[in-house]
Amino acid sequence: MSTEAILGIGVALVIVVGFIGKLIPKRMPPSKSFKCGRCGVQALHTNRTAEAWRNGKTKFFCQSCHHKWLQSHSPQEHESYGVRGSSGRGSGCLGIVVLFALVPIGTWAVWAYV
Image (spheres, rainbow, N blue to C red):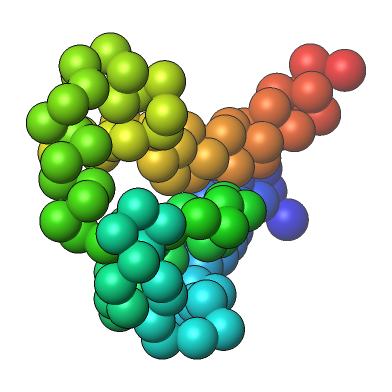
């Protein structure tokens, strides 16, 4: 099998694994609602609180209390607490795809020059 074919198979495999990873549903909290850690109201989980649950947080805040917290803290404090803006920084998907694409290329380079 030629190195171009191996490289092509490797890139195709990375793309397929990436698509399959996107199709697998993310884990969700065991209950659909939670008690707000500030005001005590029962609220439904949102994408924000579900992501916090997946990151190991145990105290959640309703949308109203979260908005009040955002208003009372500077944007630099938001980043220190892991609150992301609309830029989507920090997801790392592109970096992982590039890493997996470079593994077959690196393997080919090692085989070609050794």
